[in-house]
Length: 370
Image (tube, rainbow, N blue to C red; front, side):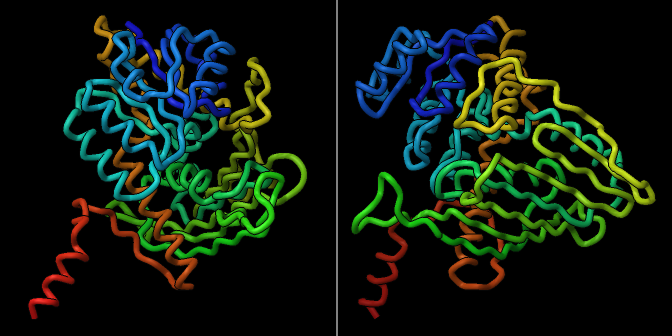
């Protein structure tokens, strides 16, 4: 039985997600907005029967068993943790900090029977699913390097809003995690139509970083990764992922997958674009849109086999990133930011326990005693 859905957020992703959920048979019972006006507007636009600006009104709604959270990262942890504590399944976007991510991981571990996944839709894009399978089968041999470029996508804050998805995707494709990172963040456009005068845009609109990846499964010293995010390039959206190995390479361009083995004169098309039958969404590039659609289909398959609305099967959503994956990604993001400030390589050390919020106070008191 498919669960009733409550959606947090009124932005472009929520506007795309709700019709996709309804098309797969989900009933969307409630929507939350940061103001009553925003919530009411989206509810009328998409035919959602209940709207509110109070989070508890959605979380405690008797018909809501799956909560989809697409709100600013600073609010994600609070809603996600509370939803799990009430007994709701959770699909959400990234948190704001590693500490917030750790609190979400702790809640997910405490309620393992509930669905708790991150909404990185690129994992569900067929081109990347096929790429991962070919990598497992040894199409490129020993993986040596990985690259990702993105031009003309959305606004500032590229490392957190877009780079986090790429960090997660890389880990999904290679089965490795970053050990050390080196990065550079810049804000080239400091004013726009909304922010002008004495105010300045402080989030990055250009990001370049490298990651040395490895782990217990590394066979030859790990994988070197280079990522470039440029949000100031004119022209059409460009999205290319390349994995190079000892015997060949795989390249995902947009929604298509190409391959070329050593000695071959040209690339071969391994997976073509199946086409997009839904409406065009200017705010969301096609790879993300198709990935979101595939993720919603997987959610339907996960829930429909069970008679209890909150029960789900892991198989269809096995490729989805967990809250622990979200913690890893946020840890890498913060390491890249540190590297941009220090100009040096930074180690990626995943939090194993929540920091003591009174740590600095305790140190100060101890110094006073001495």
